[in-house]
Length: 110
Image 1 (cartoon, helix red, strand yellow):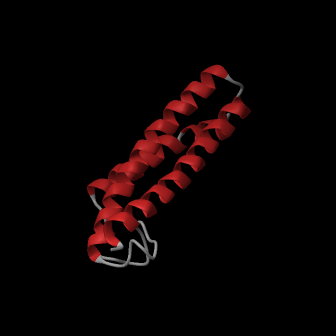
Image 2: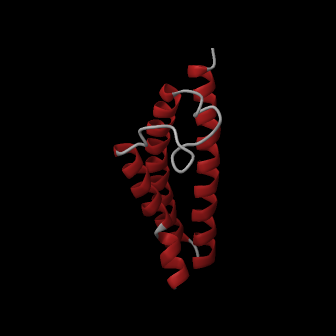
């Protein structure tokens, strides 16, 4: 049960971190935290855009993951609910990274 409850906190934690970084994005390009890819670190403008937008998307992914986790918990057994929540989170985060890189390429690679 403790494993399931800790798994159930992944969505709210992701939403909370996304909100925090959306409200307080890293000011300068750094190698410690933020949305750090070669494309996002090419300029301060790209850095600011990538960090603000990816944090917003991370918040939305956290909310969506939370909804999926609660729904899966109500409809399926504990193991299936854990797997569904984890799978949704991973797929959404990968999709977010791909989407962000496409946005950065279109907006800043001229």
